[in-house]
Image (cartoon, rainbow, N blue to C red):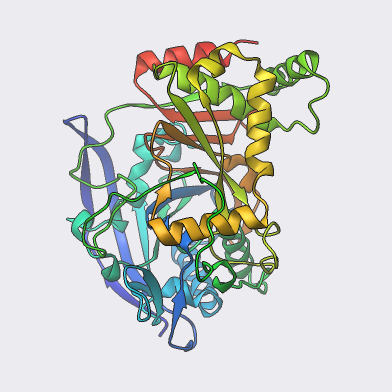
Length: 464
């Protein structure tokens, strides 16, 4: 057997938000199993890069599917998922491992590829998918779709005791499906997650693996001795003095725990509105070359959020945004690289400069944030993390993630085509760019701000 099975009774879930108890509805936990590789994999320790180790935090997302067109039972769907995952873990053996102290170096993690497996939950609810509200953006009701992936007292759980990945497959009363994931960011970045999903979809269809993963991170090892030649404003020195094996970051979803005080807001930017931003940019300065949608929208968000959050004018505001460096390092990382190779690009300026200077200047700062990431800068950053054990910048900063560019919505699984996918949480200090409605296009800007600040943010964003 390549999975073990435990049956649980149904239960009623309750959540706390801002101190108020409310009922999320009835959900039945059908089974909770551990999937292990289909055949034995080599026992080994896998090195984690400093980029990986700056991201030891769990992430949650969910993908939605319409009811299967063919007469396929929930048991059959679960069987397809379980079988595909067991085959996947032969190639992604590190995902079935556990985070442990390095045998060779103090104060760092590595993965023990011990075949411990990943946790998978099958669940059912009588509620229809339409009763859960918006599914194309973070929504508190969707947190029910990962609730069985959390254990009581999880924030006190040693990382070495937690699976690196777990999944919850939920069937709704209308027949629609949700596949939610809870995984440690240190194992995969967004691009690697997309490739994992491509492979999983193929195997559920009965096809072969499409992209052969390569999880070797050694090309991203720090130099000895370290050679830091840039200031690296994209990182902050670590202030975490806790036990190395205490979870330092979680997704913020836990039964019985208070949710974030602010509400997640979504601002929709239509294709016409984005086009008007670009048109104004070209009118102001036709020398700005190869301007992308991301650069134009990112510059607007940087300005709007910095002003809306009432930062002092002499404060330096830093916007971080992940940049794929797979083909920027020398030698390049192999195709199918299954790790973290998205490093923070950044734009920084005083709030006064953001208020007074033209949009073209802001866009150019965003472009510079990408351009500076050549091989030497990337390696200098890895060396900086080796010396300072830091994390992405926390001081007067926020991170902008272009989720829409991952293209997670196009995969055909054995039970149907993925209709949409969304992260489950947008933490304070994070802004997500999600795809707009399929029939309209555009972008959804998702962020967590107090209501008065969000109103000001929207006002500035919609200015032409």
